[in-house]
Each structure stands twice: as C-alpha cells, then as structure tokens.
Image 1: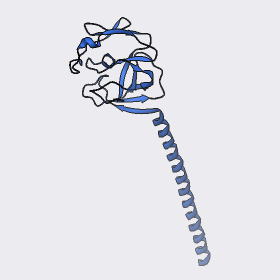
Image 2 (image 1 turned 60 degrees about the vertical axis):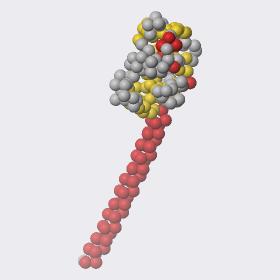
Image 3 (image 1 turned 90 degrees about the vertical axis):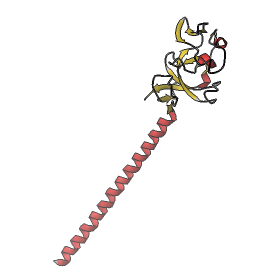
Image 4 (image 1 turned 30 degrees about the vertical axis):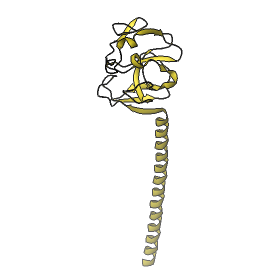
Length: 185
C-alpha cells in the first residue's frame, strides 16, 4: 500500500506542477498582449496629440498652463484655440516657439488697428491697446493700419492686453499651424 500511495502522491505532485506552469504561462502571455496593446495605444495617442506647456507668468489664454494639442484637427475656425510655430517673435520668444492663441481673423477678413490702439476685425472690436510697443521700443503708430487677410494668412490673439500676438508680429501662415488646442489646467 505504501508503494501505491507514494506513486499516487508523485503523480498528483507532478500534475499540479504542470498546472502551475501552465497557469503561469497563460498569465505571461496575457501580460505580454496587454503590454503590447498599451504601447500601441500610447503610440497612437502621441502621434496625434501632445501636451503644450505655457510657462509665462502672465497668461494670455485664461489662467491655463497646460494644453492638449490635436495635430489632426487643422480645420481653422474663428474663435477656437490653435497651436502654431511662431515667427518674428523676438525678443520675447525664440523663432519656432510653439504658441497657443485664439483665431480671430481668417482669409478675407478686414483687420484694423486704429489710432486709439483698438484692434478691429470686420467692424468688431476684439482687443484694445498696444501695451508691449513701449517694451519693444517701437512707436505704437508703427503697428497701426488696416488690411484684408490674404489666402493662407490668419490673425491670432490672446485674451490679455499684454499678449504678444498678431498685433505685433502680423499674420500666421497656414503652414505654421500645428493643430487645435484645448485648455487642460
């Protein structure tokens, strides 16, 4: 009887050992599949979206510091926020700095900066002041005038009166636009 008992015990031990390794193998396969799925999801997300950070002390768009930028949304609509690569933004920023501003003027719009420093788009006042002209050591009258925006040219501004925007450096070309931006925090 002892031989039979020990044989039965040996068979039970080895079959439970197989079960253990089979369960472990299943678990590892599931983990590998989950890890690949997570990596693919992260890649898909980051190929279309990225996070923009505004480190300025004085915020130009609300009190937001983080923006989600959707590189796949390039349908430019007035009133929406967009990220773009800035040009002609010295001395405040480096060439190519990513900026987020509100699109206020599209091709065909009439834009004017009046003698009393009001910014008018299609007869509607959208901003007042040229507060940064003094900092730039440029006579405010240099920025005054009016134009009709050409095809592929857009007028972007911030909400703050001290926003460094299109009133100082002009229009943004369509090719500079990165995508629509959404404020996060």
